[in-house]
Length: 309
Ligand code: NDP
Ligand code: OXD
Image (cartoon, rainbow, N blue to C red; front, top):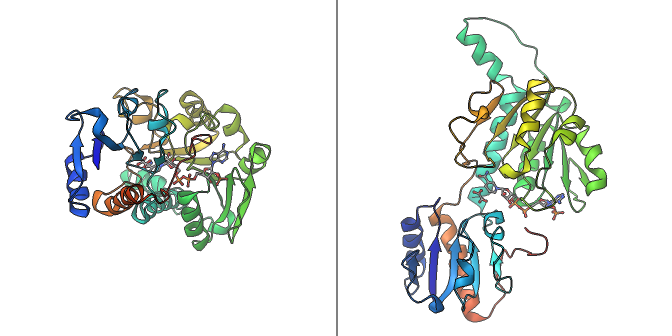
């Protein structure tokens, strides 16, 4: 089996080493050292240049480096007859819960205000809000959102979720579908976006949806930058509607040096590292899919091309 690896974001040599360790028989090729394109069976990719996947006439599996596949589906020429698999990994999921918990608690316990007070040598007692009085709303109740929701319930927050289908998770009020988005947003003191980026979810954090949040709400986006209409978010922050925002993902990455998010007093920027695929942890599931392909067994963690996630 010949496996082509392409990514500008991942340490491709480390990935090649991790795959070889799991499966020494694999013929691993790092783009652009592809050799004969007709020999490529599997493509392990992240944001491949448009047309790259189509150039492998005998491709049998497209495997994403990560959980999100929007960077692969962005290629208008993607060969849709080839199965596309994504990563579902316990360590990555745990990492996302750590990230969301960290920033929910940072807002909830007024850490930024206290840090400012310390800088000014100001001793100011701040009244605490009980976790049970805050509603954390999670947009996207899949692998990541579901895990995050359970952790937040354990911390005593009121938790609401919004997804396409109705969910039954203890302690979580489930909203689903476009008709129930408004009702969901109206109760969220902290909004967490863990949606996949699809034509339906692009720009979903907009002037309209932000205006439905209670005044003083806080926004955490670790889904994709394309979920946020940046000018609308800045307007909501500057008009004192929102208390603040933590953003891990951006329309354009890396965030350009003159972007207003960098210096906005109410914005925390992190460089798309809320959670990550670690080669040694993820290589076994990729090799498992390659073995399944060889044995004619069903591929796991498949993406539905029609839904876009
Ligand atoms: P899943 O596919 O497991 O879950 C997606 C969730 O979004 C599902 O609950 C789905 O609803 C919901 N959803 C999709 N479309 C809509 C819609 N139109 N309306 C309402 N709900 C919708 O994905 P994961 O949880 O594994 O990952 C989510 C995203 O997180 C990834 O796509 C990626 O963009 C991002 N991510 C970011 C990382 C980072 O470091 N910042 C790291 C990893 C992922 P339903 O369940 O009803 O189908
Ligand atoms: C992913 C990511 O989708 O890291 O896995 O963003």
